[in-house]
Image (cartoon, rainbow over the protein chains, first blue to last red):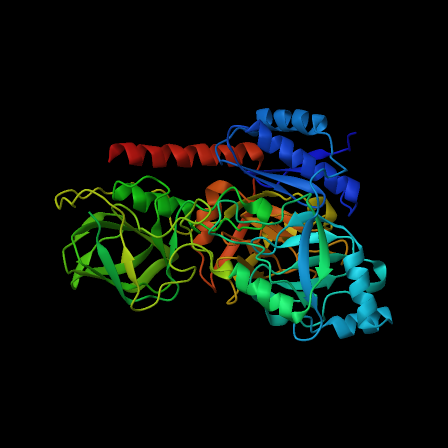
Length: 229
Length: 312
């Protein structure tokens, strides 16, 4: 299975494999598969490969001649098969919903015209897929949130979102790996470390991985937080 | 042999930078690295370091540093008055700070960012393959932040400084080129037909809220066709992205890995360092160039740098 793409220059040191510029799980799966195939190929002069929802950025050494690279990329991407079914099991993430951990759960419930328990139920019911990472180290954009609770970002972002906060922004859900400013609707918080630079592979989440959330109470949160500290 | 360097005064925004944290943008990790890669490389070459060795990037106001051992030092890029124990020393030349000596940055004369390299580089932990500081994510460098008074830096190991030589660099280019060369960006077709003409005819002032992440440029608005932003896509250093206001943002070393504003143009690799020397209030002018010209400029720059590295 292949998808149409073109190779676009972004200056003299970045090539972009551009698929259809839409959010679509199949398109994203192609981008993720293309990025994996390009990584596997270890092309000379390539110093970074960046999959997004609908493209793959290839950052090259400034002196690299681009035409042979374009040809090689074109060949590799055309041959890459999208793994639309992720074979690895979903990563299970415990979340303590509501209260101080999820200060926007009430607003999301009002948006959905349901009670908070129903919102939690909808959030844990789905298996999400990491479409891309960005914004900060380890921040994974995951889809697709139940339309009923897919509340847009806050009009005024918070200046400080605590580490581990789980948020919703439209059809996307995500976890803040570090304390930072942020505008997503915070529904809960996880004690799991999403990003740990003391590990050789610091990132829990990668493009294409599946994720499921399950609710925990405050006692379990405290206990798990202690274990991971 | 290592040397301790005490930060007596940090300067406005002094960070440790190396060649950048490449290879992790797929996980949202910004590259960071020097704003002026050319000056950075010159400073390292002058003290005999490898080209990506960790050095200090000094911004607008320089630090005062005390060395507990003799060390070969070079400062390149923005031109500052420099003093070792109150005796003037010269930019873009190798000099030695003696044991117990103090290196002080005085007035800035031209440019915005200077690179201070010491023989052996700066020894801070390697995070994801790099020592570069990215302050927005508090990653790398000295505790992920700009230097502060009282910080105690350590150099890497290097041969004891020999005080005799003083290698002078060739003049690579003026700190301010008359204009910065750009290529049409990946989304230029999404702009009104004259967008690139507007961009190259107007002059743009670097805004006061500019930093290592990006420069906010003020000038003639670049006309967009649509008010809608796009689904997040790849960003490049030098990317000129345009929010609905039409006032471009030039993405620099600390840029986020992805972004949703349409990209009208990209500064060519050879001229990134020229942009990196712009301070708030400076005026930038852009000039269109072809991919062939961009490559020729980079080949030429590389030839000059390589010649300098060999001649030392």
